[in-house]
Amino acid sequence: MRDDTTTSTLAGRPVARVGFGAMQLAEGFGRPKISRESALAILRAAVEQGVNHIDTADFYGTIAENANDLIRVALHPYADDLLLVSKVGAERTADGTLIAAQRPEQLRAAVEANLSRLGAERLAVVNLRRLDMPPGIPADGDQRVDIDTQLAELAALRDEGKIEGIGLSNVDADQLRHALPAGIECVQNWYSLIDRTHEPVLDACREHDVAWVPFCPLGSAFPDRPKVVDQPAVRAVAGRLGATPAQVGLAWLLAAYPRTLLIAGTANPVHLAENVAAGRIELDADDLAELAGVAVAP
Image 1 (cartoon, rainbow, N blue to C red):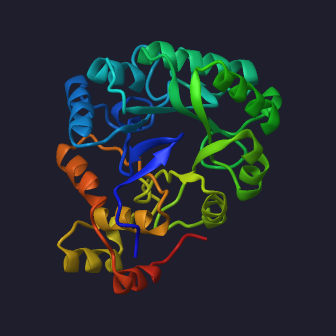
Image 2 (cartoon, one colour; image 1 turned 45 degrees about the vertical axis):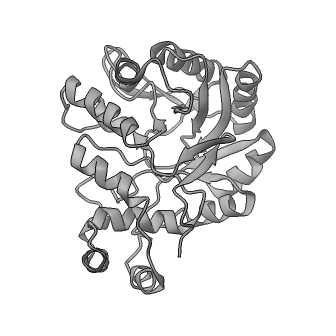
Image 3 (cartoon, one colour; image 1 turned 90 degrees about the vertical axis):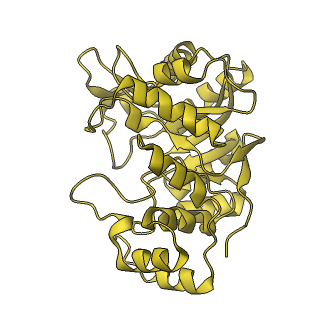
């Protein structure tokens, strides 16, 4: 059974365990563009429903308009309890191509760009997106930078007060353990009920009390990837609980570790309300046993 609280901490600050991922609101990741009005409305609705952790990146979108621009228009001036979390390690070119940006000076420039476009004085956490393994673009040539050099630059930005905490994204358990002396607040990795490839990283987070922020928490929008909501066991548990399959998939993640923080994104107001409500769903031992049998990706 999971911890029955709906809050945890991130960078030493209270945070609702169900947050919001802004990637789907911007162009550039193969999703249909939603209207600007709809994007602003869903951001405001998320905050109104208690979300105080918004995950974004300056490369979510285009140079003309990205997720940070939308967040600023919708929510600035920001509430004192709102945690804005971004990531660095990639950037958009003028033609919209996503490229690696792993060098220290690029990480610094990305933090400055996030602050400028968000209209913020500091970021609660900046996640270093490593490009050593899929998914995403690989790091080649001078973009293959050792993690210690990157962490030193982020630590300098933290000392300057531009960021409050450092996170990691797309890392393995050895990289997390190596980085711990730098003060790691959270890890963002691909993880869901049906793809537990990064279970060793979650175990390391448990061991060292690091927040765990799984992305693609319901599987993937890619057509060749299975989805959590399509699994018969998930649907069966949802039926018994009077919940949606998506809520069961999210509740399972919350049950796995009290410091799991969700950043499910959506442009649909109904799905937003369901995601927030997933934080109050409790799975009992029978539910968890049934879900344990769901096939996991190799």
